[in-house]
Image 1: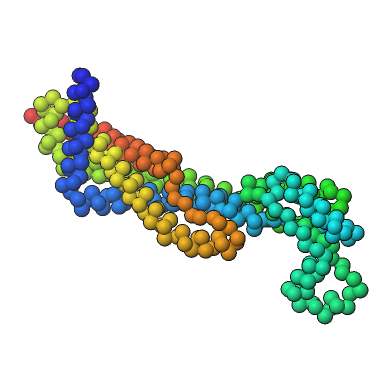
Image 2 (image 1 turned 45 degrees about the horizontal axis):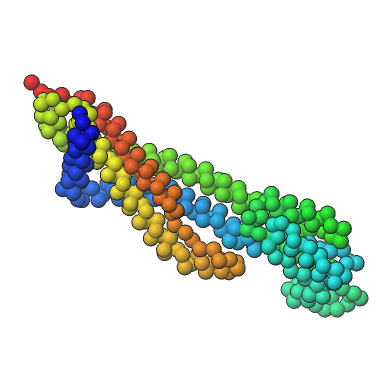
Length: 307
């Protein structure tokens, strides 16, 4: 068989599969809806995890540390230390909070203004507020910055509230595991839906298959249009899943941007990237082909021309 003949037969099988799907629009749309929603759910979870990981950089300014200087360190020396701190790798910004400013803030928010007036002097030290760079917002990088500043002789204490970072990393790790489990489960569901759909189509075309085999058609020849049907179901389901995800992203962009602005971040929700989109379509079409092949391989063996 020449290459052109093989290409012609594959083209005929593809066009035939498209024609059969077009002649049953309601059944085709319902099947695509099931496949599309099954694909959209794990893809949406993966998209959520990826945006959450991206947001940890966008919300980097919510992660900071307070470097409390010793009581004898003057404000002028605190300003010099702030210059040195800005040169430390991983530091995005440094703000000096003077002892007087710290006392004023404490007076404003604590409600102990009258008690503070009774103090003979300001007991608070000068403080450096350190904001790490987004790529240094992980727990390991933050701990490294904490140790760096703790070694300075003028520093009395470095306070780092990293517990929420640990919890958030644990949540992301759990979510990534859930994405993998959901992808496997819903992928198996897509496989079952396409396999059952192809099974029903084979049974409905039993007489046609018997005639094709009677005139010499092989199982591979008979199976070919069903494989293309499965791949078309996979492609259409992926297209529908992509549309659902893009619609969800568009609907959530404004409230997410508003929430990010409350944390002083410019984070914006994003949809599927090129590699993720390619994985969605290729994976869905592969599931369609596999489901169709398994079903056709199982049921075509039982159909033989009747004498």
